[in-house]
Structures are given as structure tokens and as C-alpha cells.
Amino acid sequence: MPKLTSGRAPEALDEISLFWVRHADEVQLYLKAWFCGEENYVFTAITYMDYDDGEHYPFLLMGNKHIVDDPLGRYARVCELLPNDNDAKDLYKQIGNTAADNIKILDNLEGDVLILPLRSFNVYDSDDLLQKVAENIFVNLFNGIDNISDYFSKCKTFHDIVENARNDIETIIKFSEDDNLSLEFEERFRKAVDESGHYVDKNKTDAENFFMLTFGGIQQAVSVIIPCMEMGFTPFMRYPVALHYSLLLLDNLNEYENARFMKFRICVAFLIHELIDKDAVALVPIKIFLQRKKEYDFESKLKQAFSKNNIDIKDFSLSELTPIIISELEKLYDYINSADV
Image (cartoon, rainbow, N blue to C red):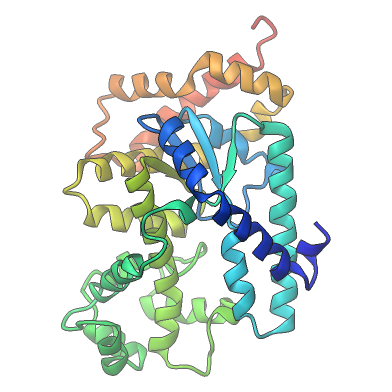
């Protein structure tokens, strides 16, 4: 821990990365042997899970097996790129928080949650396929733009962006968690630039900042969704921007049946995270919660409720899922906190 919270963090992260490289074959074998054909969920697109805030409660309600996609390995690459001492200090603090949270998960949820750098063990890790997919999705936001270089050649100002963009660009783009879609598109963009700190540079062109604000979300969605489809996992996402771009990607893959199923499962998991009363399920010790949630089998009861309400997994809305999930969660609270169980 001391290494991870100091200037020696890159050294410690290299040691962690080297450990996983040495054991990559074993991990691959383990994943294929124990996670094949199951309802598997991975907590991903995160800095850390946040055990103290009870983030494990909604995560554990769906699926049979659960993995936290550990970001520590990816932080090693970020450390190499940081030129600013203040940014580095912030990152070291974040790394320390992630490591501390991992320890709490291992201490309290051992056997129920695994911690693995999951995206480091997919077939795309060594090539640029995911990067190309992300670039293609970004380019497809525009008309008459063939590649990223073409975008920067034709777009400098925000007016250029709008002139070359698809007509539905305003509804497709989500700049941040606080992006207010009721505002004018340019106002949303200017507000995002003002509030994004070091992620953008106000001295750069609108086109450069627009790319920085949008491409990261697209790239993250691609790096999560495609490997998870390959490995048979459902991503558990708690951030609206990550969810937004993941659903956008899955809509583009709608011809694949597993993409449609994944979209439904992602949305259900996100709503559970948003709607659950974590205080209500935390009234009992964690071991009691784990025992009773297995006995209750919330996922099966939720599926029955969806079927009873004629929910079509290929054509649904979050608004029609919400009251069903709230109702089933209320029944879960009663069971977990029942003295008679």
C-alpha cells in the first residue's frame, strides 16, 4: 500500500502487471473452466467499486458469478503519460483508494466476488482492433467523413462539427454525467468544456475538444462490450455516460442476438443500482445478506415478474422496467430483514 500511494506507484503497478502476465494462462484456463455458460457479471468501467458505500449489494443481486474488473493494471499506462505533478498526485491517491477497496472486497466477499484485470485477458489486448472499432463509431457520427484525419481536416469550429454531423447528433452525444439534454447542443458543449478540467484544453480547437469529450466514452464502451460479448459476461455499469455509449454500441450490433440480450441485462442491472435502497439491505451483517440473497433468488423472481408483465427484452423502455424492479426490491428487503428466516 505505501508504494501505491506515493511516487513509487508506477513501480508497484509494474509488479502487479508482471504478476498477471506470469499467470495469464492459468487465469484464462480458470475463466474457461468455471465461467463458461453461466450468468456472469463483471463490475466494470469504474475506478473502484466502493465497498464502504455498499456498491456490492446491487452488483450481487444478478447473476451467479461476479468479477470486479480491476483497473490497477491500466493505471500503470496512465502513470507513464502524466506530465503534471498535481495530476500524478491525484492519480496516486486514486490508485491507493482502489487498492484499499480491493482489500475490503477480498476480506468481506471472498468466494463471492473475484478481482481480476479482466479486460487484460481478452483476445483483443495485443492488437488495435478495438481502437479501430471505436474510431469507426466516432466517424459514423458524421456525413462525408471517412476517418479521424478527415474529421480534423474538415472540422475546426463547433459550426463545422454541426455542419458535418448527422441530424441526430444531439441525442447521440452525452458529454458528461451532468449533461442537460434540454439545453441547446452548443451550450451543452461549452458547459462541458468549462467543467472538464484537464481533460480538455480551452486553447485547442472546438473539434479537438469535441473529440476528447466524446471519443473516450465511445472507446470505453468498445473496450468493455466487445470483450464481454466474447467472454460471455454481462457488464455491470453504474455511470450513465458508460451506459449511454454502451447501449449506442449494442444498438449498432442489434443483428446479433446476444447483443440484444446483453442490452436488456445491462439496463436491468443499471436500474437495480439506481433504485436499490442500500440501507435497507445493509441492516443485516454481510454474511447474513449473502446467505439470504442466495436463498431468495432475486433474479428468478424478477424474471417471473417481467414475464407476468409481458416485458419484451427486444423492445422495452427503462420506464416500464422501473416499477417492476421497485416492487421486487421491496419484497427482497422484507425477506432479508425478516426475523423468521
